[in-house]
Image (cartoon, rainbow, N blue to C red):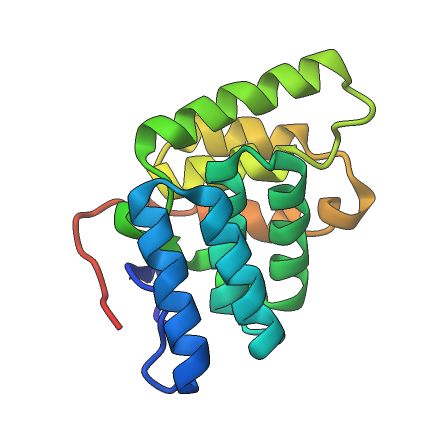
Length: 177
């Protein structure tokens, strides 16, 4: 993956036919706003192709759209710990929830953190991720400042370096696969 890559599909030409088919169904469900179905399809694709970081990212995006914020935070933490090369990948709006849905998710996560500051320490990564996907530097900084989870805190220096070192990824250029 090239630096500051933005992808608009989770389907890889090298995927086995069944995995590609299920992933295509997940993408269609995302486009239709049926995030629970997308989450189900990405979960199945990961059973067929375990450990695929692109599919893991798809699962996290579907979970955000479905409002499964704790699951999305866990998925992102797992993804970035196991595949740090994915930290720099952005997703076009066709491959993730809409901007409005992402901003609403960030608001919902803030409310969750306000209600239970101690029990929500893993959710900061989700706010930072949303900021990264939207090219919103203040949102990235807010999310990174909220990270207290020991499983995630070790990633913060790398996330800061990559997500805050340059202008946001939203340059209008999209790499397609």
